[in-house]
Image (cartoon, rainbow, N blue to C red; front, top):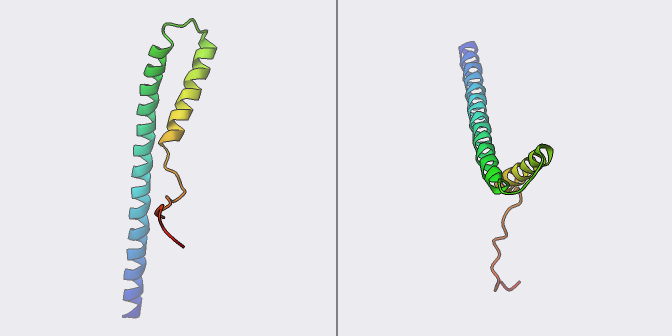
Length: 91
């Protein structure tokens, strides 16, 4: 009887870990696809921005990479928690 409960508990634990890992992998894949789409969008935007200027290919690629990194960094969520204190809060 105890062995049966232990087997069920182990099976439930394996299923729980497996489902959470699968959820993490799906979320990771969606995040990577979103980053790729954003890179393509900002690449086209930057290309149209520099279309009128004479820029050599290396400089152009350097600017694209810098612009893309800046935009992707601005999309990341800040780890610091917002300050919920009111302005007129008296201590």
